[in-house]
Structure formats: C-alpha cells, structure tokens
Image 1 (cartoon, rainbow, N blue to C red):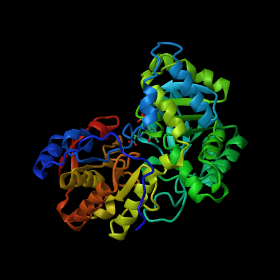
Image 2 (image 1 turned 45 degrees about the vertical axis):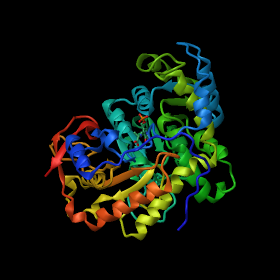
Image 3 (image 1 turned 60 degrees about the vertical axis):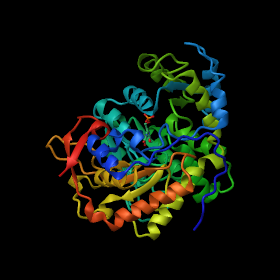
Amino acid sequence: EEIPVELHKVRIVQKLHLKPIDDRLNAIKKGGFNTFLLNTADIFLDMLTDSGTNAMSDNQLASMHQADDAYAGSQSFYRMEAAIQEVFGKELVLPVHQGRAAENVISKTFIKAGDVIPMNYHFTTTKAHMEINGGEIAEIFTDEALKIKSHHPFKGNIDIQKLKDLIAKYGRQNVPFIRMEASTNLIGGQPFSIENMREVRKVADEHGIMMVLDASLIGENAWFIKQREAEFATSSIKEILRTMCGICEIVYFSSRKVSSTRGGGICTNDHDLYMKMRDLVPLYEGFLTYGGMSVREIEAMAVGLIETTDETVISQSPGFIDYTVKELDKLGIPVITPAGALGAHVDAMQFLPHVPQKEYPAGALAAALFIVSGCRGMERGTVSSVRLENGEDLLADMELLRLAFPRRVFTLSQTKFLIDRLHWLYKNRELVGGLKFVDEPKVLRFFMGRLDAV
Ligand code: F0G
C-alpha cells in the first residue's frame, strides 16, 4: 500500500465527537435522511464537501490581520487582484461572494432564451443559473466519462465531434460560450487535458465562440495534468495554470474550493467582456472592491491563490483520495477509478443493487453510512437532479456517494476508519432500503429536501 505523506504539520486542532449510533439514527431521522440537514455536533468526519472546509495555512491566517476595511478601494482587494493576475494571468478582476454568484453574473450577461451551452459536465448551481436565464445545458462528454471503472486519465474531456455536431445543429448564434469545468465535480472529480482544451479552442475559434473555464477545482486538475499529460511532466503548476487559463476568455471560480474558505471571482483579459459583466457586481454582490466578501476573506483568498501553485498543497487531497479509492477497490467496493479530485466516489447503484434508482440509492447510502459511522458524505445522484414536468424524476447519469477530502483536514487513521466502516456496510448492504421525498423544494431540492424510508 502506498501511504500518502503530509508535507505540513498540524498546529491548530478542533475537537470531534463520535456519538452513539442511536443518537445518529435520531439525528438523520430529524434531518429528513438528508445529510445537508445534519448538525455537525452529531458528525464525526464531515466529508460532505471541500467547499469552505479546506484547512487554511499559517500565512493565510496571518494575512487576515492586515485586512483593510474600506467600502471602496481596499488594499486587500488590490492584493487579491494581484494574486489573480499572477496565478491565472488575467488582468481584469470582478469579485463575487461565491462561485454561484459568478455563474449568476455570467449567465445573466451572456445567455438569452433558447441558447444552448455546451460543457464537459454541469454542476448543480451552474445548470440552475443557466436555465433560469432561458438557456439549456448540453453535456458533451466522451464515452469514457460515465464508466465507473476506467484507466482513462482524462474522463473530464469534451468530445470534439459532439461539440462540432452541436454547433452545427443549434447554430453559432445560439451558443453563447463553451464551458469547461476543471476536475468535473459531478462525475467523480475527473480532470480534462490541455490537449483537449486546445482542440476545443480550435473549434471555438472556427465559429467565433468564447470559452469559459470553471476553475473552482483548477489546482487539482493542474496536478493531474502534471501527473498524466506527458507534455507537462516537467512544467511547474504555475505554468500549467497559466496555460489552462490562457486558453479561455473568461475564468471564474469558487474560492471556497480553490483557495480559501469564502468568496469567488471572475477574471478576463477582454475589456469588452469585463464591461458587459461589471455593472451586475454592485447590483448583486457589493462594490467592485469587495463583491460581498469580507476583507479578511479577500486576504486569505489572495494568499490561498498563490498557495494553489504549490504542489505540496494541491496534491494533498488527491493523495488521500487515491489511497482511499485503491483500498476500497481492493475490498471489492464499487468506486470510481481512476481516483479524481475532491473526494472518493462510491457507486451506489452497484453498492445497493436492490434499491431501484427512483428510490435514490445514493441518498440511501449517504444516510446509512452516517448512521453506521458518523461520517457524512454527500448524495450526488437523482436527489441532486430535478423533477420533470410529467412528475417523474430526471434520473441522474450516476448515483454517487461522494466522500470529500477537504485539503489537509483528515488524518490517515481517520481515513482508515472510514474505509473500515464502508467495508462493514458493504458486507451488510441488504440492511439499507430506499428513500422517497416527503418535502421537495422546486429549485436545488437536494439542499433542503426531506425524505423518508419507502
Ligand atoms: N462550480 C463548481 C465546479 C463547484 O464545485 C461549485 C461548488 C460551484 C461552481 C459553486 O460554487 O459553492 O462557491 O457557490 N461546489 C460545492 C461542492 C458546493 O460541494 O461541490 P459556490
């Protein structure tokens, strides 16, 4: 077994609680079998997400003390702007309060009713913002993307032929941009290659279509490029990040994932594009030098962005995920391979073959794992999908239990605890039954929705 080794030391810690199983059963019942509705006081290992939960560094915490409170013209903003210019190579910066706020600004600015937006894969908030503005998403991933077991290094790639066909079918005037999401979140944190980005760029140029990069998980995608794409084996992460961003007109990100615990941003080198988006920032976010963030968060973001160029920082989470995926695979537990970014992704369809997809196997597995272990994962399947006009669920392409590894948060022994409990649950999987909605919000239902045993 290959042991992931931390290149940091732990100096501030927080106490965790491992409660009796009956308390957890009560907690999940109270939370409508939805792990979003749990109180962390009842949770042992919180693997819901890396969003806002990555560990911060000493330098990030120190930087927060120099935060400059000002409604307009804060020096904190200019430090953050300089970091974005250095790391992403984009000069014009719009701050927003988090990633989906960037999606709001971009969707409102560029999408009109009837548009179709091609992408490697959607993210929940991305899709919601595009559809609210009258757009439709088109996922043009390769045949490899949805295979659970695979050796393909870049399952996040766009299928170039599908892209060409799509533009031919809808017409250039109805394709406002092509979106590429780094470390494709909903299909197992799978990266794309720079070779693929360049091919997409070629097609985009032929039709005069711009490219938008969702860089929320760009650090890890860059790390995988260094590991898996021969041309970049000896490149620095900084060079890889610059190359990726250089291919796209607009780069946006959730800082909650890429750099720190709050915030987000949009950046570009194109003045016209900047001007089109700019006025929405004071309208929805806040003045142009804070965008809804506190100045402390902005300082941490500036330092965190620079730290994203440090291999020992961005490889930590993928290293632990790789360890977990290999160990689960050895135990015969169905898990997405190769290991990606963000988390280990367990295939709930194979884990719980007796639970039909319309009874939400991934949601059921998330609830069951919490009950037996206190580990909180996130459902990434049909609960996270939508209900169609005919009243049926739009069944998700994959039913995944995502076990996130926020950067530099968990230890190897905690990871082994998780693996052991999952193994126990796998051996006793017939205990787990399906779920049904009892309270279902219309938009982004997975956040607040409540379910019960069928
Ligand atoms: N894009 C991607 C690829 C994301 O993963 C996220 C958030 C967003 C956009 C939205 O950013 O949360 O700051 O508004 N992903 C989190 C997750 C929520 O748990 O995967 P946000």
